[in-house]
Image: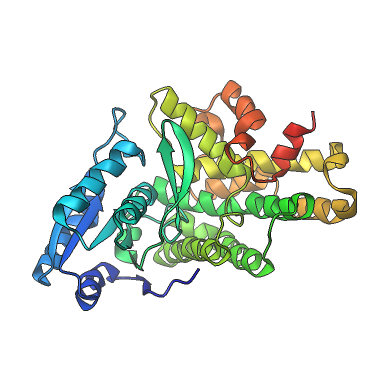
Length: 366
């Protein structure tokens, strides 16, 4: 799937959004933000659009009872209604992953394009086509649209909250286990596979690991490296047309925890923080299974798969990297207790039953 629009990851990128939209001939544009991202970038963008002669109005997505902005039915309907009432010709998502998911699906539903303006390097889904939504309390990824252009302003990204930068790093570390699960799914379950997309994702991952100290210190080069890696992971998913390269058992654990926190009416935890911790847990589990449960690996591919696991960093190594980036390292820090953790390890594979992860093979072998 091609991406033909501009991708700007540089200082001052926000100032190039209005000229781009003007050049594209848009006369009425909607800005989607929340209270925080409106102050960070949305208000300025709205003013710049108006100065460029473009009609612009911001919809500030309302939080739920816990104070979280989530990509659920209420948020989607709020934005769809605003887009229709304003006769918007495009929507600009100003925020992190959740606001992008709301915007991409609302734009898709109304039949207009959307433009990405990330305000924190927190996830790899800015330029994806899938929208992970909470529908009736269940996490479901719905096909929608990717952005027609992406403007990531490093002046804004370097000022993002430390927790969100650490979350973006955690989302990238999750590729260690997602890439293994994709290999396992291909060899053990016959899933489609692309070596080019695998290598593209792995390069993005390793660039982050090589710059983990700079990312941890929040230097401009470190934050730029992280943002470029996140966008590159998103492009890899676009190229393949599915999310195998970037989402394995570690994401299934994260989604399971998210749904449980919603069910209990508790505040949400950053996606990448959950993914990074889940990656360490899955790495430990997979390394143990390689030694204790060789029958889980098809005999014809056993040597290749166990060798791939041996190249994966240990849970301890992953937690060390998470700590270096300033992120949480244990589920208890996120309010994930022992019972929920153990239950998720038994049931999280059911969230994406069509994916042949090693976690699924392990749970279905009993």
